[in-house]
Image (cartoon, rainbow over all chains, first blue to last red; front, top):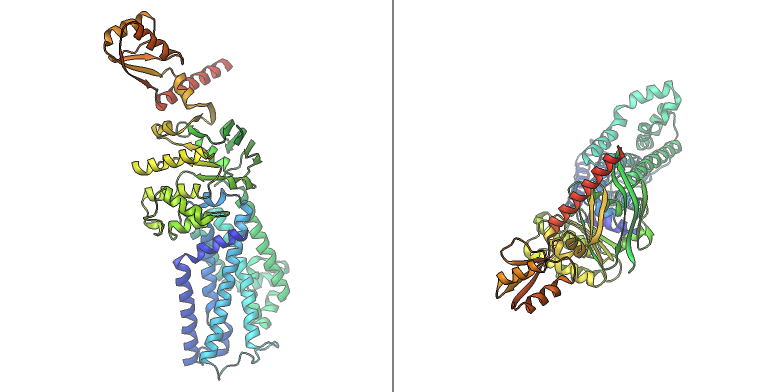
Length: 258
Length: 310
């Protein structure tokens, strides 16, 4: 299994886009850190640090594209056959791709957190403390970490859907489109969701609600009464939906002719 | 000799279309086997099914005694393959590809050996997006052989190769088969296959029509001809006609060999008749005409069987 994960990671590291996107993300974080330094009234330093200098949405877009292409590129380049007719089972091959993308997600989160800490140390040494309170008994740093963890989980809910669609359609455009629409959908339909949830309590358990997990952690007082959900329920819902989508994708991948 | 691949009563359908019908055969270790048949006969489907790429309805596929299914196929560690066209990642170099798919011990030695055998040094460190068709084909073949597997399945391996590369590949296949590697090769370049394959699997409409050796197929079609150069062709022809040997209408002296004894009998007859023999050549029939004859006969038989059934 680790051989397969290493091979998938090898392919990722050999793609120019991996390094260009890394450079872009570093650039965006540095840019927003400087903007926060120059215009602290508009780009509030504590909020900007918490948001990892606007890196989370960028990571989401990168990861949606990466999760779609790690499967569809094998069909596009005609390499799926070569990948499959080895001693490894189909399940092992698919799971190795999941693990590679999981590690790739970790790479982005660890890197963006590291850059954010570096920017804080370089530009806000005396004006911002990561230990200062941010409400709910959390410091800016711990709150930032909690939101990152929630973003990570809800991103994986989207990625599990993207994996499934990439498997079904063998087409990255379809999978990426649905992933990005899914990312924006939660914010667009929040109002409609709250109306539905107020009318029928069970409606809160739909997957779109689960993608609001990081928003709820950022503003618990606002979202908890609207969605009638606790943090642990959102976490559980995310995990269950991730498992369902990955399992369907696994089943389809095992059954299909290549 | 033992079998490296055994396919028994294999049936495969795509929806309502039954594409492989009770396909059964065994491949003997160290042999080069040609898989031939017309377009749409089921060659690629058969190869893909053997490699676990397709599910199948019934039957069994075993590589070195271990079952192969799309879900479980550990025994494919003994198999290398190139199916349809080489799958190439454009952002990787040829070397990266070999590194990616090389397995087990001595990977570097294996990679260097296959690069040298297929003469790929000049382009192996370049990104594959700039490769010509022939370079991609060579890389695909190298990927199939890099782990020096016991069984190699090649679908149209000569596609896009120039004469020099074709000869390199032919030499490589022959040398590896002499070391015990079994090859199953599907190709429409029948002249090339005729020079390589010892055994043949002829497939038509999803059925194995005949499993035979190259020699037997060519001989069974009555196309084995002995061509003679003598000091008196007219007298030679008269003697042969008198002794009731079958000659061809060719202006040269040609005798159809009906058995292995034909040649010594002809030589004895001519020498005793006072004709000097300057040269003797055996002209075997070609695979193309023999294959077409087999397919024709098989279709006639099938049609008759269908008519009788009605």
